[in-house]
Length: 334
Image (tube, rainbow, N blue to C red; front, side, top):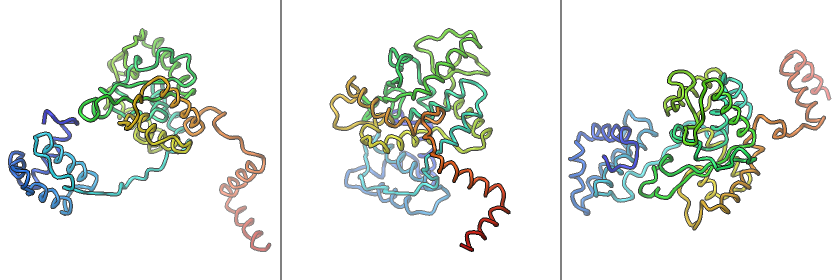
């Protein structure tokens, strides 16, 4: 278990559940693969994929991956075809609208929470990484940049820089409006809590208990739950990653570059984190600003008079059903 490049507690739970289903201990699972020719372990995993269990498909898929990782890290790797399993996610991958983002932003009581919301919608930084994010991950002159860049080390992103993730970094950016909100947050926190910011400080600090202490992964989750409940919307930090990916896809950014912004391994690029490569990425990110920004007026295209009239008319019809019925009769007589 110690060699697993994953969340060990979570993986241990998945492995335990699989052992319970198979009625075997971890040692007995390994004994099923005592030789390369022996395929008993693969057959058992295949049986699990089609068995009716109490586990939802998403959890079943995670359990299968945990079992395969367990065999692999104990030098008894299963055949690649073993445990093939596909499932359709129940949750729609729709991009949260700008209206949803605005409601979430308006539900914030502090500049810290506003910074958390806007970072979640424009950086593609994952929740755990966000809890480990520090100011020294920003480029040196970020406060003077229109679109500040952050380079996050592999140690705080998926894979933690180990194994196949060795050398992977995440290159992300703040929108101009996000940069402005971050500067407000820093100034507010400094004045409110008499905090002197240091370069190696975590970005998000507590505003209630344990002032000056970093906001943990669980703390970020709790903050987002309070905000979504208050705003009356559904939103998770993973939804923010979908926002960024979709915005970049819509301006024809290559999948490889999108992987770089999401902190995933980039293949076939000699210097994926060089200065020229980052500047190219910043330029493409700039093209996506109209979809990423949701507060500034400049990002919302102005309606022409005809479009405005039609929208106002539709809202009036919805507000006054009797007028809609009258209008409907008028149309039918034409």
